[in-house]
Length: 342
Ligand SMILES: Cc1ncc(COP(=O)(O)O)c(C=O)c1O
Image 1 (cartoon, helix red, strand yellow):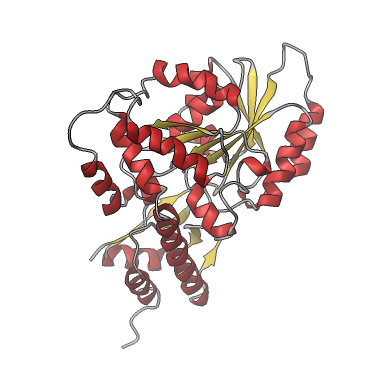
Image 2 (cartoon, rainbow, N blue to C red; image 1 turned 90 degrees about the vertical axis):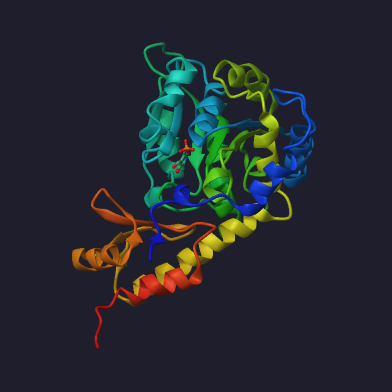
């Protein structure tokens, strides 16, 4: 037996997404996004986000979605203001600095791995605006769910974006797990993004059932106008884009993205409840599909020996559920928490 709880990246591809790729695999189609599937994806994104002029750019990874988005929103001398634990700052090898020609990331504090509005305000108040010795804040980048599985409410996003906009910052949302945030909050995709002040969204799909497709969704035109060129220069205007677009289109069709995310969130809620009932301390607020846990070494060893796969990072055990995790798998893991009494 193995139970996969290392990462949602370790999960397989949703059958509906593979079927959608097979369905476009006949005949020929115009290359580089000039095909009908990519056009249909554009329409679907506008429908799902209730935004008649949203523009979508399929890319190959979450890192590319973030770094390309941000490079189109900041000058090289700008700074991207993010939470101090943000993936863009600590886990993307400096991709944003590379693609933007040198912009830096500035980490802001806040509980629950979410930026505190007063900390953002204090940072912006302390900047030497117009001083070329100082990076000039150009973008607010939020991550929801965060790498620690915590989710911003619509009101929390709106409060932060309102502060950012008093200084004309643009707003980016790293939504590598955006579907999990939509399910967790019960908000509409529009309320959780552009209606709360988000200009550009990195819309993840790969962790939640796609094969190699993420989307940059622009709700304002200026970054989109740049992305036309930046996606090409960085090698993300793929010649057979129809296969990526088919994945994203299937993902956003008939609620597949939300069904997959709901499964991941629900399985995690079951796991977290069982861990708490067994007296195990969870260190994050479990809003989505990730739990960070102080797991006694003996318990960790027992789980590992039984085939439960998980990562130990920064001294904590991290469990991640996915669209594929079953209730039975969670019951199996919970059954292993208490030593056999027989
Ligand atoms: C919050 C967040 N953003 C972005 C990424 C980057 O995605 P990718 O690994 O596809 O580059 C990840 C991946 O783990 C992530 O967790």
